[in-house]
Length: 104
Image (cartoon, rainbow, N blue to C red):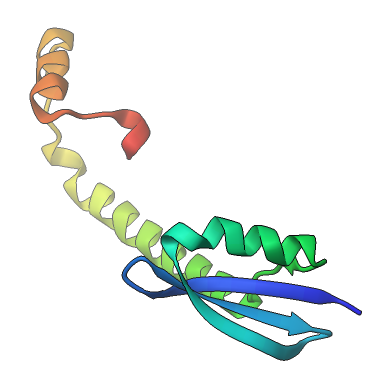
């Protein structure tokens, strides 16, 4: 018997947790963000494993690929208009704008 669960956002700070046994719907429950960790731990202690809905992941990949394509097109289009700053001015710009390369 294969026990699995998925969870997804239902609405603000609440999650829809759906349980499946051998690929068939078993139960669904909405839990708050504050209850989520405990609820998932309880499911795992009952032998459930977290699963992912493949179509949802593929749709996310498609959306991210589209976003990447758009950003690349914008980069190509705006290439001639980049700021040409000295190292000192680049550091000042990054300080003023709170630029953090890791956030990009």
